[in-house]
Length: 359
Image 1 (cartoon, rainbow, N blue to C red):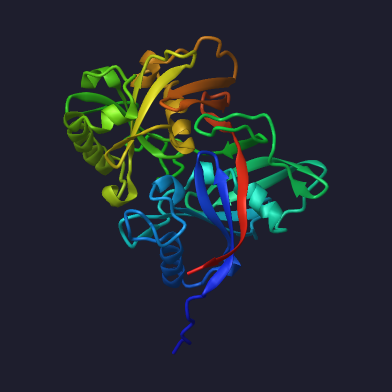
Image 2 (cartoon, helix red, strand yellow):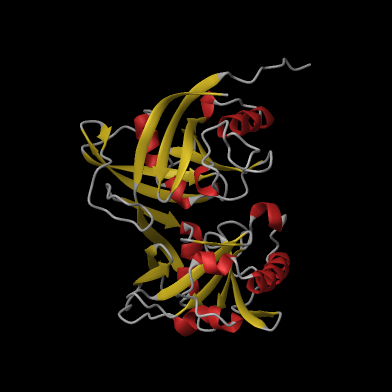
């Protein structure tokens, strides 16, 4: 009989902003080894389930009810392993189904802060294995005198102040979540008389033209979230596309992400409105952005029809994605066969507090 190990009263925790999200960052060794006890602890510290998360540090928003679990990696060429956990707000559920590219931005700095990676003078490279998806990311962190430099001039949409840039390179993202770049085997499918591209170059997404739903794609996220007729249509397509893409437990996992696209109007390549679990979000997830940017180069895709790709020559291309909060630029590199072999994006992160958190 295994010995009962009580849930810890408190553990070390670093609260960080990564990209446009916030999370509690933990060393794996500081959390209970048993996943059930770990999840119970995380629900307690976040204050879930409760719509306000009033009894925890969660901010009553999925963007601030996140957890990063980091450990020294035993994999060749990898510095640390990163497990992302989403703590649901209104349910006693902690899910590891998805990874989070925004929270990933804080993993490199956290690894240096905790001594898992030795800081070099000027810049420190951190190779990260994403346990949720099996992907590998390389971050370059500004460091000086053994410490992370958080201040800088980089500005990302959705964050009011500038910070030190964190370039993130992603390797071999095709089928990042479900092992198939085009999960249905087709560049386009037709669902409910709407032409769609089902793609996974980091996150399962369904890309469609906004105009096919009688909207411009320039509406605010609040306007679209209140459009019940639109949401009903998107829900039907999401359900059917999820089955075609072999995405299980669609409702709980908020998959696939629905992306409506239209012509850019602020100097970017394409305009987007992203829907997750029945809500139009004010920005776009990093991994969804990787999938969308790639779809812009599929000749049959709805995104290809509206994307402004002028100036993209050679094997390196940049796709500036407009969303309600601003613009996110994705850099793609293609091999000789025309397949994406590398994607990169710049994010920022900031340490907010470091100490003990109590359950």
